[in-house]
Length: 151
View: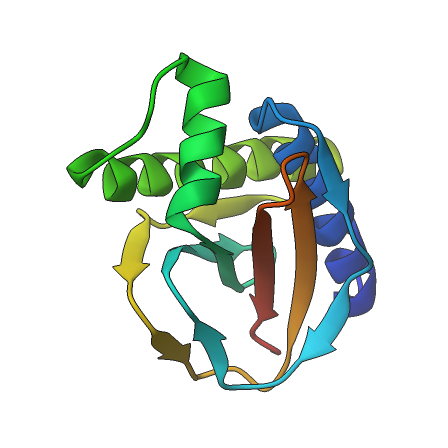
């Protein structure tokens, strides 16, 4: 399967995964291509993708957005050390669901454990990435970044 077809399948599966994992009304905006460096402002989780396609899935977000998602999922505020823990777990849930959806489409992908980063961080090490902006019903935002390592 061609890389461009895989990318389209992964973008569609990512949208499907986000809408099934996050119990908040989402508005997924049109994807765009971005180049390095990508700068995170507050909080993100990085999951490595290996197998049928190699790359990284990064969910860049804010503490307020994580709080909103946690409130919707568990009926409680996500605060303190729970912010980083829940951010990693949210990344795991989205990436794990993504792998399940892709497998049904014939593409086998495994994931790495999540790496959670806080503060301002710049990501390098990719030529281009697909940037998928997501707006929660409250107006809070997530940015999903999908980097693909060319073979």
